[in-house]
Amino acid sequence: MVATEIEYLHSVCRSIFDLWQEVVATVWDGIKLLDTGTKKRQLKHSYAGMLFSSNKSRTTQELVDWFGIPPPLAECYTRSTTFFTDLREFRDRILHQGGEPPPIFDDESGFLVSAARVPFRGLDIWRPEERHPNDLVPLLPVLNYAIYRTLAICDEFGQTIEGIFQLPPPIVPNFWLQLRGYFDEVLVSALEDIDARLHPRSASNAT
Image 1 (cartoon, rainbow, N blue to C red):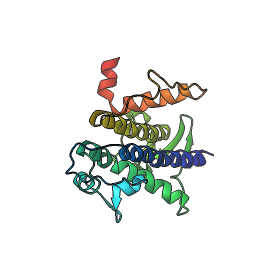
Image 2: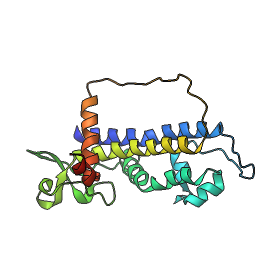
Image 3: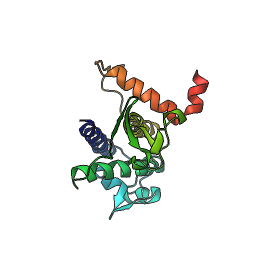
Image 4: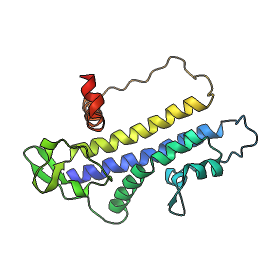
């Protein structure tokens, strides 16, 4: 059951990138560049299609030259390359290649995985007291990290677009969308926990 949830979570995170790319591409279609010398091309509707060309990751300058997008927007793509690559490879290995999630161990403190089998490169988000023999570490922070980075990348895109383009006025001014559900408290707690792990100094200063 835990393995199934891991597969589902990573699949949803991976799908969000393509859904978000549809939004970015649609916004870009409606943008009129002030610099008439810049050749504006239609963006890919696949996030992977933006990041890679012939299975090779595009650089910031290549994105600027090929699509005509401003450098700050191109940097949003390149900064996300490592995380997206790890997420996609993990998801594809399970769904398309018949692979399995890393072994999951059940402990009194919760579910554990080997730190060496975590799908994200260079991830060190566990506190010293959480580490177990044989380099086993809690699973939950890894799942929190996948959610956190997915939302953070989309948020970075949104802020960048608002900062460099003059967008049309709001369709419904002063409209706020508020979500309410039994899972909200758990989600907020998960995001706060991983934020504190990734930015321990800022978390300690806040307290």
